[in-house]
Amino acid sequence: MVAYDVIGDILIVGEDVTNEKCEELLEKKNINVVLRKKGIHHGEFRTQDMEVVCGEKRKETLYKENGVQLKLDVEKCYFSPRLGTERMRIASLVKEGEKVLVLFSGVGPYCIVLAKNTEAVKIVGVEKNKVAHDYAVWNCRKYPYVKLFNEDAKDFSFDEKFDRVLMPLPKSAEDFLDVALKCVKKKGIVHFYDFLHENDIPDVALEKIKSKCKCKVLDVVKCGQYSPGKFRICVDFQVL
Image (cartoon, rainbow, N blue to C red; front, side, top):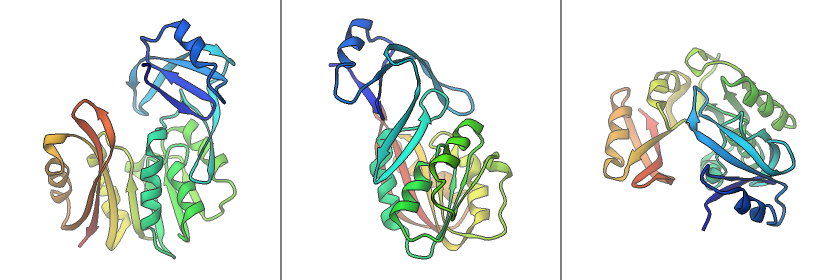
C-alpha cells in the first residue's frame, strides 16, 4: 500500500516509491502528474523538493475544497490538503461582522475559505513567502475585503484590532504569540497551532500560551497526525 497526497491533479509520493509504481498511480482518475518527494520539508518556508516522475512536466495545479479553488505550486509553497476539515471548523466559529487576521496565510486557504463561507467583514492575511503571497493574491482576487500583506509576521502591524487571529504555523508559532496578542481585541479569540507528542497534549501548548497572556481556553482540537505519536493540534483561546 503506497501512501500519497493528492493536490488538484497532482499526486505526491514518498521518495522510496519506485518509478513503476508511480506509472501505475498515474492511471488514477483525474491525476495528470506524479511527483516524488526529495528529502524533508526545509528552509524558512517549510517547502519540499520534488521531482516529476511521470505525467505532465509541471508542479502547479488547481485545488478545490469547501467551495473554493486555489492555484499553487506544490514545491514552492507549503500547503496541506489534510487541513480542509480544520479550515471549515474555523469558518463555523466566525460570526457575522468579524474582522479576522490570518498569520502565515500561505497561498490563502484560510482566507478564501473564510471569505466564501462566513460573513466576516474583513480578512487580513500575512505571508513572508513571496511566491505563496502572489498565489494568494490571485486566489482571493474576487473578495475585495480580503487584504494580503507580503511581509514577516514579526514586523506586521495594523491600524485596528481583530476579533479573531489564526496562527496556522505549528512549528515555532509561539515565537509569534506577541504579534497575535498585539493584534487581537480584548475578549478576542486566538487559534494557536502546535506539533505535540500525544503525552504532551495540551499541557505544553497551554504553558506556551499562558506564559504570554491571561486567557480562557475554549477548545483543544487534534487536526491530524503528523508522525507516529505526534499530532498537529489547535488551541482556541479567548484573551482576557
